[in-house]
Length: 364
Length: 126
Image (cartoon, rainbow over all chains, first blue to last red):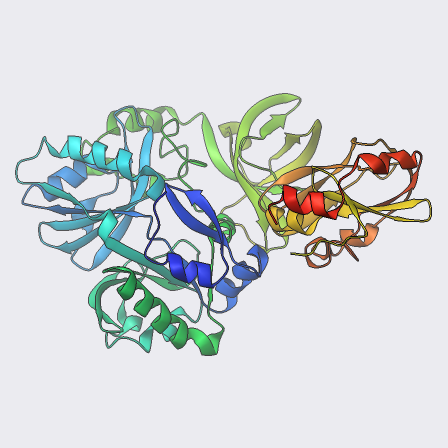
Protein backbone atom coordinates (compact mmCIF):
# COMPACT_ATOMS: atom_id res chain seq x y z
CA UNK A 1 0.00 0.00 0.00
CA UNK A 2 1.26 3.48 -0.84
CA UNK A 3 1.75 6.26 1.67
CA UNK A 4 1.60 9.99 1.15
CA UNK A 5 4.46 12.19 2.30
CA UNK A 6 2.38 13.14 5.36
CA UNK A 7 2.29 9.64 6.84
CA UNK A 8 4.51 10.58 9.78
CA UNK A 9 2.26 13.54 10.57
CA UNK A 10 -0.83 11.30 10.58
CA UNK A 11 0.91 8.87 12.92
CA UNK A 12 1.93 11.67 15.23
CA UNK A 13 -1.67 12.88 15.31
CA UNK A 14 -2.85 9.33 16.16
CA UNK A 15 -4.94 8.98 13.03
CA UNK A 16 -6.89 5.86 12.36
CA UNK A 17 -5.61 4.75 8.96
CA UNK A 18 -7.54 2.87 6.28
CA UNK A 19 -6.85 1.74 2.74
CA UNK A 20 -8.25 4.22 0.25
CA UNK A 21 -7.40 4.52 -3.42
CA UNK A 22 -4.38 2.29 -2.85
CA UNK A 23 -3.06 4.57 -0.13
CA UNK A 24 -2.95 4.28 3.62
CA UNK A 25 -5.06 7.33 4.48
CA UNK A 26 -6.39 8.90 7.69
CA UNK A 27 -10.10 8.20 8.13
CA UNK A 28 -10.31 10.09 11.42
CA UNK A 29 -8.27 11.39 14.31
CA UNK A 30 -8.96 10.68 18.01
CA UNK A 31 -11.55 13.41 18.60
CA UNK A 32 -13.93 11.90 16.08
CA UNK A 33 -15.84 12.71 12.94
CA UNK A 34 -18.47 15.03 14.45
CA UNK A 35 -15.77 17.11 16.07
CA UNK A 36 -13.70 17.30 12.90
CA UNK A 37 -16.75 18.32 10.90
CA UNK A 38 -17.44 21.14 13.32
CA UNK A 39 -13.81 22.31 13.21
CA UNK A 40 -14.06 22.82 9.44
CA UNK A 41 -17.43 24.57 9.65
CA UNK A 42 -16.32 26.99 12.37
CA UNK A 43 -12.52 27.25 12.26
CA UNK A 44 -9.94 25.63 10.03
CA UNK A 45 -9.03 22.05 9.21
CA UNK A 46 -6.35 20.41 7.09
CA UNK A 47 -6.93 17.41 4.83
CA UNK A 48 -4.13 15.41 3.26
CA UNK A 49 -5.54 14.63 -0.16
CA UNK A 50 -2.24 13.76 -1.82
CA UNK A 51 -3.83 10.56 -3.14
CA UNK A 52 -5.55 12.67 -5.79
CA UNK A 53 -4.18 12.41 -9.34
CA UNK A 54 -2.67 15.29 -11.29
CA UNK A 55 -2.05 15.19 -15.03
CA UNK A 56 -0.15 17.88 -16.89
CA UNK A 57 -1.51 18.60 -20.37
CA UNK A 58 0.54 20.65 -22.83
CA UNK A 59 0.69 21.53 -26.48
CA UNK A 60 -1.20 23.35 -29.19
CA UNK A 61 -3.61 20.38 -29.21
CA UNK A 62 -4.29 20.53 -25.46
CA UNK A 63 -7.45 22.63 -25.66
CA UNK A 64 -9.02 20.53 -28.43
CA UNK A 65 -8.13 17.36 -26.50
CA UNK A 66 -9.73 18.61 -23.27
CA UNK A 67 -12.82 19.79 -25.16
CA UNK A 68 -13.25 16.26 -26.51
CA UNK A 69 -12.44 14.55 -23.20
CA UNK A 70 -14.46 16.65 -20.75
CA UNK A 71 -18.05 17.90 -20.64
CA UNK A 72 -17.46 21.50 -19.54
CA UNK A 73 -16.38 24.24 -21.97
CA UNK A 74 -12.62 24.50 -21.54
CA UNK A 75 -12.47 27.42 -24.00
CA UNK A 76 -14.12 29.55 -21.30
CA UNK A 77 -11.08 29.15 -19.02
CA UNK A 78 -8.40 31.81 -18.78
CA UNK A 79 -4.98 31.39 -17.12
CA UNK A 80 -5.47 31.34 -13.35
CA UNK A 81 -8.93 29.79 -13.51
CA UNK A 82 -10.13 26.25 -12.87
CA UNK A 83 -13.40 24.55 -13.66
CA UNK A 84 -15.30 21.60 -12.29
CA UNK A 85 -15.98 19.06 -14.98
CA UNK A 86 -16.51 15.39 -15.76
CA UNK A 87 -15.30 13.00 -18.41
CA UNK A 88 -17.66 10.55 -20.01
CA UNK A 89 -17.47 7.43 -22.09
CA UNK A 90 -19.12 7.52 -25.52
CA UNK A 91 -22.29 6.10 -23.89
CA UNK A 92 -22.44 9.06 -21.49
CA UNK A 93 -21.37 7.07 -18.41
CA UNK A 94 -19.10 9.10 -16.16
CA UNK A 95 -15.45 8.00 -16.10
CA UNK A 96 -14.68 10.50 -13.34
CA UNK A 97 -15.36 14.02 -12.16
CA UNK A 98 -12.37 16.33 -12.10
CA UNK A 99 -10.98 19.83 -12.02
CA UNK A 100 -9.35 21.38 -15.08
CA UNK A 101 -6.87 24.19 -14.37
CA UNK A 102 -5.64 26.53 -17.08
CA UNK A 103 -2.00 27.28 -16.24
CA UNK A 104 -1.22 29.28 -19.39
CA UNK A 105 -1.94 29.16 -23.09
CA UNK A 106 -1.58 25.55 -24.26
CA UNK A 107 -0.92 24.34 -20.72
CA UNK A 108 -3.50 22.76 -18.40
CA UNK A 109 -3.66 20.52 -15.33
CA UNK A 110 -6.30 17.86 -14.71
CA UNK A 111 -6.96 16.84 -11.10
CA UNK A 112 -8.79 13.53 -10.75
CA UNK A 113 -9.97 11.26 -7.95
CA UNK A 114 -7.26 9.12 -6.39
CA UNK A 115 -9.36 5.98 -6.70
CA UNK A 116 -9.68 6.57 -10.46
CA UNK A 117 -6.17 7.77 -11.20
CA UNK A 118 -4.94 4.76 -13.15
CA UNK A 119 -8.18 4.33 -15.08
CA UNK A 120 -8.35 8.05 -15.84
CA UNK A 121 -4.74 8.15 -16.97
CA UNK A 122 -5.29 5.29 -19.39
CA UNK A 123 -8.51 6.85 -20.67
CA UNK A 124 -7.00 10.31 -21.09
CA UNK A 125 -3.82 8.95 -22.68
CA UNK A 126 -5.78 6.87 -25.21
CA UNK A 127 -7.88 9.89 -26.12
CA UNK A 128 -4.84 12.14 -26.44
CA UNK A 129 -3.46 10.00 -29.28
CA UNK A 130 -6.09 11.53 -31.56
CA UNK A 131 -4.61 15.00 -31.11
CA UNK A 132 -1.44 16.35 -32.63
CA UNK A 133 0.86 18.16 -30.22
CA UNK A 134 -0.80 17.15 -26.98
CA UNK A 135 1.55 15.82 -24.30
CA UNK A 136 0.27 14.27 -21.11
CA UNK A 137 2.40 13.76 -18.01
CA UNK A 138 1.18 11.92 -14.94
CA UNK A 139 2.49 13.98 -12.00
CA UNK A 140 0.39 12.20 -9.36
CA UNK A 141 3.30 10.58 -7.54
CA UNK A 142 5.24 13.84 -7.35
CA UNK A 143 2.63 16.23 -6.03
CA UNK A 144 1.59 16.80 -2.43
CA UNK A 145 -1.88 18.20 -1.92
CA UNK A 146 -3.33 19.69 1.24
CA UNK A 147 -6.84 21.09 1.45
CA UNK A 148 -6.98 23.83 4.08
CA UNK A 149 -10.65 24.54 4.64
CA UNK A 150 -12.87 26.56 6.93
CA UNK A 151 -13.71 30.18 7.75
CA UNK A 152 -10.20 30.73 9.20
CA UNK A 153 -8.35 29.05 6.33
CA UNK A 154 -7.32 32.13 4.37
CA UNK A 155 -6.19 33.97 7.48
CA UNK A 156 -4.09 30.95 8.40
CA UNK A 157 -2.39 30.61 5.03
CA UNK A 158 -1.99 34.34 4.48
CA UNK A 159 0.62 34.40 7.26
CA UNK A 160 2.82 32.16 5.13
CA UNK A 161 2.67 33.78 1.70
CA UNK A 162 3.06 37.15 0.07
CA UNK A 163 0.40 36.28 -2.51
CA UNK A 164 -2.76 38.17 -1.59
CA UNK A 165 -5.14 35.26 -1.07
CA UNK A 166 -8.23 37.42 -0.72
CA UNK A 167 -7.75 38.47 -4.34
CA UNK A 168 -8.05 34.90 -5.60
CA UNK A 169 -11.67 34.27 -6.48
CA UNK A 170 -13.54 31.02 -5.99
CA UNK A 171 -12.24 28.57 -8.61
CA UNK A 172 -9.29 30.84 -9.23
CA UNK A 173 -5.69 30.06 -8.39
CA UNK A 174 -2.25 31.63 -8.25
CA UNK A 175 1.24 30.25 -8.50
CA UNK A 176 3.27 31.54 -5.59
CA UNK A 177 5.36 30.51 -2.63
CA UNK A 178 4.06 29.49 0.77
CA UNK A 179 6.48 28.96 3.63
CA UNK A 180 9.21 29.25 1.03
CA UNK A 181 7.96 26.45 -1.22
CA UNK A 182 6.65 26.98 -4.75
CA UNK A 183 3.06 25.94 -5.04
CA UNK A 184 -0.30 26.32 -6.69
CA UNK A 185 -2.65 28.16 -4.35
CA UNK A 186 -6.16 27.24 -5.45
CA UNK A 187 -9.41 28.64 -4.06
CA UNK A 188 -11.19 25.32 -4.31
CA UNK A 189 -12.36 22.57 -1.99
CA UNK A 190 -14.88 19.86 -1.28
CA UNK A 191 -16.37 21.11 1.97
CA UNK A 192 -18.58 24.02 0.98
CA UNK A 193 -16.49 26.29 3.22
CA UNK A 194 -14.09 28.97 2.13
CA UNK A 195 -10.70 27.36 1.69
CA UNK A 196 -7.73 26.55 -0.44
CA UNK A 197 -6.10 23.53 -1.93
CA UNK A 198 -2.33 23.80 -2.15
CA UNK A 199 -0.30 21.72 -4.62
CA UNK A 200 3.43 21.41 -4.23
CA UNK A 201 6.31 19.12 -5.06
CA UNK A 202 8.91 17.65 -2.72
CA UNK A 203 9.54 14.70 -0.44
CA UNK A 204 8.73 13.97 3.17
CA UNK A 205 10.98 16.77 4.43
CA UNK A 206 9.19 19.41 2.37
CA UNK A 207 5.80 17.94 3.27
CA UNK A 208 6.66 18.00 6.98
CA UNK A 209 7.89 21.59 6.78
CA UNK A 210 4.68 22.77 5.10
CA UNK A 211 2.47 20.78 7.45
CA UNK A 212 4.24 22.24 10.48
CA UNK A 213 4.14 25.76 9.09
CA UNK A 214 0.42 25.55 8.36
CA UNK A 215 -0.37 24.14 11.81
CA UNK A 216 1.74 26.79 13.53
CA UNK A 217 -0.04 29.51 11.54
CA UNK A 218 -3.45 28.08 12.38
CA UNK A 219 -2.77 27.39 16.03
CA UNK A 220 -4.56 30.51 17.24
CA UNK A 221 -7.67 29.34 15.36
CA UNK A 222 -7.58 25.81 16.75
CA UNK A 223 -6.44 24.20 13.51
CA UNK A 224 -6.75 20.40 13.37
CA UNK A 225 -6.14 17.60 10.88
CA UNK A 226 -9.33 16.21 9.33
CA UNK A 227 -9.86 12.69 8.02
CA UNK A 228 -11.69 11.21 5.07
CA UNK A 229 -14.83 10.43 7.10
CA UNK A 230 -15.50 14.08 7.94
CA UNK A 231 -14.59 15.00 4.37
CA UNK A 232 -17.53 12.82 3.40
CA UNK A 233 -20.05 14.36 5.84
CA UNK A 234 -18.90 17.86 4.87
CA UNK A 235 -19.37 17.28 1.15
CA UNK A 236 -22.65 15.40 1.63
CA UNK A 237 -24.29 18.32 3.45
CA UNK A 238 -23.49 20.45 0.41
CA UNK A 239 -24.80 17.79 -1.96
CA UNK A 240 -21.48 17.35 -3.76
CA UNK A 241 -21.24 14.08 -5.68
CA UNK A 242 -18.71 11.46 -4.65
CA UNK A 243 -17.40 9.42 -7.54
CA UNK A 244 -18.01 5.71 -7.03
CA UNK A 245 -21.01 6.43 -4.81
CA UNK A 246 -23.28 9.00 -6.46
CA UNK A 247 -21.82 8.94 -9.95
CA UNK A 248 -20.07 6.22 -11.90
CA UNK A 249 -19.92 4.68 -15.35
CA UNK A 250 -23.62 3.73 -15.16
CA UNK A 251 -24.82 7.29 -14.56
CA UNK A 252 -24.67 10.19 -16.96
CA UNK A 253 -24.24 13.85 -16.02
CA UNK A 254 -27.84 14.98 -16.53
CA UNK A 255 -29.23 12.30 -14.21
CA UNK A 256 -26.63 13.27 -11.62
CA UNK A 257 -27.64 16.92 -11.60
CA UNK A 258 -24.46 17.88 -13.45
CA UNK A 259 -26.26 19.55 -16.34
CA UNK A 260 -24.74 22.84 -15.19
CA UNK A 261 -21.25 21.66 -16.16
CA UNK A 262 -22.34 19.83 -19.32
CA UNK A 263 -22.02 22.29 -22.18
CA UNK A 264 -23.68 20.68 -25.17
CA UNK A 265 -23.42 24.01 -27.03
CA UNK A 266 -19.62 23.75 -27.21
CA UNK A 267 -19.81 21.03 -29.89
CA UNK A 268 -19.29 17.29 -29.83
CA UNK A 269 -17.36 15.59 -27.04
CA UNK A 270 -17.20 12.08 -25.56
CA UNK A 271 -20.75 11.15 -24.71
CA UNK A 272 -22.35 14.27 -26.16
CA UNK A 273 -24.62 12.38 -28.58
CA UNK A 274 -26.13 10.27 -25.81
CA UNK A 275 -26.37 13.18 -23.40
CA UNK A 276 -28.04 15.41 -26.02
CA UNK A 277 -30.56 12.69 -26.75
CA UNK A 278 -31.29 12.25 -23.06
CA UNK A 279 -31.78 15.98 -22.71
CA UNK A 280 -34.22 15.99 -25.60
CA UNK A 281 -36.20 13.02 -24.34
CA UNK A 282 -35.93 13.91 -20.67
CA UNK A 283 -34.07 11.82 -18.12
CA UNK A 284 -35.93 8.92 -16.50
CA UNK A 285 -34.25 9.22 -13.09
CA UNK A 286 -32.55 11.94 -11.10
CA UNK A 287 -30.14 12.19 -8.21
CA UNK A 288 -32.00 13.91 -5.38
CA UNK A 289 -31.45 14.98 -1.81
CA UNK A 290 -33.39 13.06 0.83
CA UNK A 291 -34.09 13.93 4.44
CA UNK A 292 -34.86 10.90 6.54
CA UNK A 293 -37.97 11.13 8.70
CA UNK A 294 -36.41 9.22 11.57
CA UNK A 295 -33.85 11.51 13.09
CA UNK A 296 -30.85 9.20 13.42
CA UNK A 297 -31.43 6.48 10.86
CA UNK A 298 -28.53 6.53 8.42
CA UNK A 299 -29.55 5.60 4.89
CA UNK A 300 -26.43 4.00 3.46
CA UNK A 301 -25.08 3.44 -0.04
CA UNK A 302 -27.03 0.65 -1.73
CA UNK A 303 -30.19 0.76 0.41
CA UNK A 304 -33.38 0.51 -1.65
CA UNK A 305 -35.65 3.50 -2.19
CA UNK A 306 -39.26 2.30 -2.14
CA UNK A 307 -42.48 3.93 -3.31
CA UNK A 308 -45.91 2.33 -2.89
CA UNK A 309 -44.26 -0.97 -2.02
CA UNK A 310 -42.07 -1.06 -5.13
CA UNK A 311 -38.32 -0.51 -5.23
CA UNK A 312 -37.80 2.55 -7.41
CA UNK A 313 -34.16 3.45 -6.80
CA UNK A 314 -31.08 3.24 -4.61
CA UNK A 315 -29.45 5.39 -1.98
CA UNK A 316 -26.00 6.43 -3.20
CA UNK A 317 -24.69 8.28 -0.13
CA UNK A 318 -26.13 8.91 3.30
CA UNK A 319 -25.10 10.02 6.73
CA UNK A 320 -25.85 12.25 9.65
CA UNK A 321 -25.51 15.90 8.67
CA UNK A 322 -23.69 17.09 11.79
CA UNK A 323 -24.25 20.80 11.09
CA UNK A 324 -27.96 20.26 10.39
CA UNK A 325 -28.59 17.60 13.04
CA UNK A 326 -30.57 15.38 10.72
CA UNK A 327 -30.01 12.29 8.63
CA UNK A 328 -29.62 13.02 4.93
CA UNK A 329 -28.94 11.05 1.79
CA UNK A 330 -28.48 11.24 -1.94
CA UNK A 331 -30.13 8.74 -4.23
CA UNK A 332 -31.65 8.16 -7.62
CA UNK A 333 -35.43 8.26 -7.95
CA UNK A 334 -37.69 8.23 -11.02
CA UNK A 335 -38.12 11.72 -12.46
CA UNK A 336 -41.77 11.81 -11.42
CA UNK A 337 -40.68 11.47 -7.77
CA UNK A 338 -37.82 13.96 -7.99
CA UNK A 339 -39.68 17.16 -7.10
CA UNK A 340 -38.97 18.56 -3.62
CA UNK A 341 -41.70 17.45 -1.25
CA UNK A 342 -42.12 14.02 -2.84
CA UNK A 343 -42.29 11.26 -0.24
CA UNK A 344 -40.52 7.93 -0.57
CA UNK A 345 -39.33 5.25 1.85
CA UNK A 346 -35.93 3.74 2.46
CA UNK A 347 -35.72 0.04 3.22
CA UNK A 348 -33.17 -1.45 5.60
CA UNK A 349 -33.05 -4.42 7.92
CA UNK A 350 -36.60 -5.47 7.07
CA UNK A 351 -38.06 -2.08 7.91
CA UNK A 352 -38.86 1.05 5.94
CA UNK A 353 -38.17 4.61 6.97
CA UNK A 354 -39.92 7.65 5.46
CA UNK A 355 -37.84 10.15 3.50
CA UNK A 356 -38.66 13.43 1.81
CA UNK A 357 -37.10 14.70 -1.40
CA UNK A 358 -35.47 18.09 -0.75
CA UNK A 359 -33.46 20.67 -2.61
CA UNK A 360 -29.67 20.36 -2.69
CA UNK A 361 -27.68 21.72 -0.90
CA UNK A 362 -29.33 20.54 2.26
CA UNK A 363 -30.35 23.23 4.69
CA UNK A 364 -31.29 23.30 8.34
CA UNK B 1 -7.91 1.39 25.29
CA UNK B 2 -9.41 0.03 28.48
CA UNK B 3 -10.28 -3.56 29.39
CA UNK B 4 -12.04 -3.88 32.74
CA UNK B 5 -11.25 -7.22 34.33
CA UNK B 6 -14.68 -7.46 36.02
CA UNK B 7 -16.38 -8.00 32.63
CA UNK B 8 -16.82 -10.98 30.35
CA UNK B 9 -16.53 -10.50 26.62
CA UNK B 10 -17.95 -11.82 23.33
CA UNK B 11 -16.35 -12.26 19.93
CA UNK B 12 -18.81 -9.62 18.70
CA UNK B 13 -17.23 -7.08 21.08
CA UNK B 14 -19.96 -6.85 23.69
CA UNK B 15 -19.23 -6.98 27.40
CA UNK B 16 -21.35 -8.11 30.34
CA UNK B 17 -20.75 -7.25 33.98
CA UNK B 18 -22.73 -9.21 36.56
CA UNK B 19 -24.14 -7.56 39.67
CA UNK B 20 -26.20 -10.03 41.72
CA UNK B 21 -28.34 -11.82 39.14
CA UNK B 22 -28.35 -8.86 36.74
CA UNK B 23 -26.10 -8.70 33.71
CA UNK B 24 -25.25 -5.20 32.51
CA UNK B 25 -24.44 -5.23 28.80
CA UNK B 26 -22.65 -2.83 26.50
CA UNK B 27 -20.13 -2.66 23.68
CA UNK B 28 -16.40 -2.64 24.30
CA UNK B 29 -13.99 0.26 24.05
CA UNK B 30 -12.47 -1.48 21.03
CA UNK B 31 -15.92 -1.71 19.39
CA UNK B 32 -16.78 1.95 19.94
CA UNK B 33 -13.40 2.90 18.49
CA UNK B 34 -14.01 0.82 15.39
CA UNK B 35 -17.55 2.12 14.96
CA UNK B 36 -16.61 5.76 15.32
CA UNK B 37 -19.12 8.36 16.49
CA UNK B 38 -22.26 6.54 17.65
CA UNK B 39 -25.43 8.37 16.63
CA UNK B 40 -28.28 6.05 17.55
CA UNK B 41 -29.02 2.89 19.50
CA UNK B 42 -32.05 1.20 17.98
CA UNK B 43 -33.76 -1.12 20.47
CA UNK B 44 -37.40 -2.09 20.11
CA UNK B 45 -39.67 -0.39 22.66
CA UNK B 46 -41.20 -3.74 23.56
CA UNK B 47 -37.95 -5.67 24.00
CA UNK B 48 -38.75 -8.04 26.87
CA UNK B 49 -36.28 -10.87 26.55
CA UNK B 50 -32.94 -11.53 24.96
CA UNK B 51 -31.40 -14.81 23.91
CA UNK B 52 -27.77 -15.62 24.36
CA UNK B 53 -26.13 -14.71 21.06
CA UNK B 54 -29.36 -13.21 19.77
CA UNK B 55 -29.59 -9.80 18.15
CA UNK B 56 -31.47 -7.33 20.35
CA UNK B 57 -30.98 -4.13 18.36
CA UNK B 58 -28.58 -2.17 16.24
CA UNK B 59 -25.97 0.44 16.90
CA UNK B 60 -25.83 3.14 14.25
CA UNK B 61 -22.53 4.98 13.93
CA UNK B 62 -21.34 7.48 11.37
CA UNK B 63 -19.16 4.91 9.68
CA UNK B 64 -21.32 1.82 9.88
CA UNK B 65 -24.25 0.07 11.48
CA UNK B 66 -23.80 -3.08 13.56
CA UNK B 67 -26.09 -5.59 15.23
CA UNK B 68 -26.02 -5.86 18.99
CA UNK B 69 -25.75 -9.46 20.21
CA UNK B 70 -26.51 -10.38 23.78
CA UNK B 71 -23.75 -12.19 25.67
CA UNK B 72 -26.36 -13.82 27.92
CA UNK B 73 -30.02 -14.79 27.84
CA UNK B 74 -32.69 -13.42 30.13
CA UNK B 75 -35.46 -10.99 30.88
CA UNK B 76 -34.79 -7.36 30.06
CA UNK B 77 -35.09 -5.26 33.20
CA UNK B 78 -33.90 -1.91 31.85
CA UNK B 79 -32.85 -0.30 28.58
CA UNK B 80 -30.57 2.73 28.76
CA UNK B 81 -32.95 5.22 27.15
CA UNK B 82 -30.61 8.02 28.20
CA UNK B 83 -28.60 7.10 25.13
CA UNK B 84 -31.42 8.44 22.92
CA UNK B 85 -30.35 11.97 23.72
CA UNK B 86 -26.68 11.29 24.24
CA UNK B 87 -25.57 8.36 22.05
CA UNK B 88 -21.99 9.66 22.18
CA UNK B 89 -21.91 8.35 25.77
CA UNK B 90 -21.17 4.95 24.22
CA UNK B 91 -17.96 6.43 22.79
CA UNK B 92 -17.02 8.35 25.91
CA UNK B 93 -17.76 5.81 28.62
CA UNK B 94 -18.45 2.42 27.04
CA UNK B 95 -18.19 0.43 30.30
CA UNK B 96 -19.98 2.96 32.50
CA UNK B 97 -22.67 5.45 31.51
CA UNK B 98 -22.66 3.96 28.02
CA UNK B 99 -24.18 0.62 29.11
CA UNK B 100 -27.02 -0.44 26.80
CA UNK B 101 -29.27 -2.98 28.49
CA UNK B 102 -29.69 -4.78 31.83
CA UNK B 103 -30.83 -8.39 31.85
CA UNK B 104 -31.92 -10.76 34.59
CA UNK B 105 -29.82 -13.84 33.83
CA UNK B 106 -31.90 -16.88 32.97
CA UNK B 107 -28.90 -19.17 32.91
CA UNK B 108 -25.78 -18.08 34.80
CA UNK B 109 -23.84 -20.81 32.98
CA UNK B 110 -24.03 -18.55 29.88
CA UNK B 111 -21.16 -16.65 31.45
CA UNK B 112 -18.85 -19.65 31.33
CA UNK B 113 -18.81 -19.57 27.55
CA UNK B 114 -17.63 -15.96 27.39
CA UNK B 115 -14.07 -14.69 27.24
CA UNK B 116 -12.30 -13.29 30.24
CA UNK B 117 -10.35 -10.07 29.92
CA UNK B 118 -7.09 -11.75 28.89
CA UNK B 119 -8.71 -13.79 26.15
CA UNK B 120 -10.49 -10.69 24.86
CA UNK B 121 -7.30 -8.64 24.89
CA UNK B 122 -5.69 -11.34 22.82
CA UNK B 123 -8.63 -11.29 20.39
CA UNK B 124 -8.20 -7.60 19.65
CA UNK B 125 -4.43 -7.84 19.61
CA UNK B 126 -3.47 -6.18 22.87
